[in-house]
Length: 440
Ligand SMILES: [Zn+2]
Image (cartoon, rainbow, N blue to C red; front, side, top):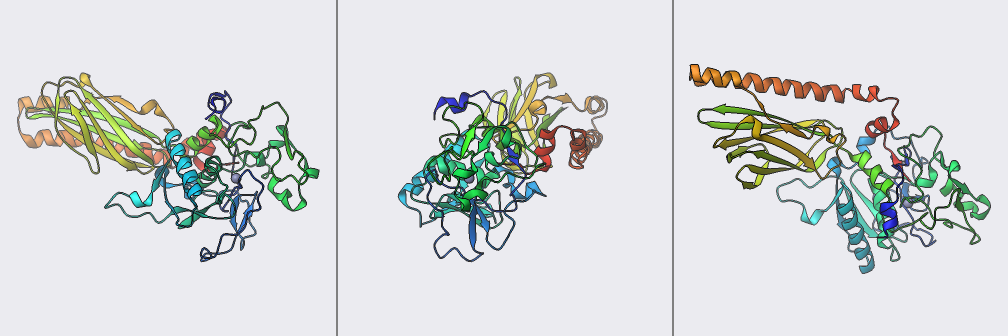
């Protein structure tokens, strides 16, 4: 990919519009082919039509754009998008989709996961995407529910599929931002009358994330939908040739998706020493509204050794002296999970550090690392004076209960929206949590 799109220093570029989450969206290839309805066989739900060239909407709905009332319901849970490739695809379409999927999976915190490789034993998700033949390149905006389509015409290349996946994740067209007239000029006289709706701006008041981003892969090119070959959009500043590019995600595109899908992981670590050995408790929480996936905890514990572990759905691997790495596949928003490691050998609380990370972007990485606190100083002392197991157990349970109480209090506090109110004047923080910022 050209370095200019990656290295370009521009602000967040989250041109996210609240509009259109309730409406399916499709995007057009860079060529100006006229998108058509998909072939028969896909008409079980309703008749589809396109807006803005490549955004799918239901013809039965006169609502082509809408403020998102509930953004999280239109995002993909835990940042994972299940998909399949339909037999109707041409070989060129398969290649374009695979390249775009691989690219998104590599550069972003989102994972598009093929349904035919779905982990055994895990329920097949109710909502998914099918890439299928269509006479245009188009996608709904955001998660619609059930199996939703992305159209792949024979001329759709990897770049146009990257753009469609942007819609799929919830992004709108950049040039429809309500503040676009400060950045571009629309030449209405050059646009075919029946195509002018593709250039309608989202309503004033639509919330935005980041600054206007000419280099967004979600921006139209200068001559899209031209009736006479002349420009339909010109930038008000010199942008080189980046406007309308279909080569790579801009920094603003990546930041937009990261904001939409950010989780908020944190970790609290406590350490219990007894005569029989030591137990390290790792309390991992996701305080965000969005779920996370591919969560990993890396623990270091001096000269100790891990002799066992317990934690629902956790797996520990790469175990060596003084270090363990443990993973859990997914963690929903507003949830917590406890992982306990049994340690042997000489370990003190001062040796212990733990760090949690995930593929999913993290809202606040500042609380992802913790050093162990020695939980039962009291319990250990009691154990020495009075080796009664019950007493030690009681002490430990008491301390653990306090940790859980605090974690729950923090989660409830956040879910109650107090944090949002505190940041009400900060549009990024507010949007991140409450709007479906769809970027165009
Ligand atoms: Zn589009």
